[in-house]
Image (cartoon, rainbow, N blue to C red; front, side, top):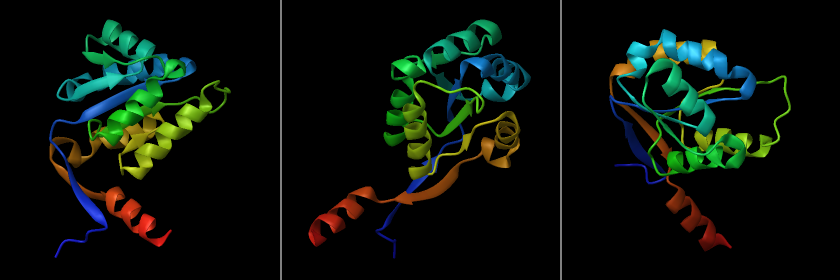
Length: 157
């Protein structure tokens, strides 16, 4: 019998990967994309505005761009996670520089956690994700059945 508290989700062999970097980390992410171009080319890539454009220009990898982070791009990517259209996030964040859109970044990280989406916030973690045997196979995971959770909460109010 299936546990109604959870939904089973499948991440396909071809991953939908979001690429994001703060300004001081864009060059590092671009270099990382060059280093892993053969793997990344097998997946669908998207990213926030400037980062997506720079990766495409400097690596020839096709990256669908959303708005820049401070103009809502982080929120757009978060919405795609909720819709089940992003499977993984590579976000080279800058921990030493204050970001004016830090609440948006925190919301993106939170929604990735809520939906059990792998997220790398530095090069080492990104390397480990791409080197995983799961990159070339389907992955089944469980996420909270939010509809049931909301229904149950509304019955107790």
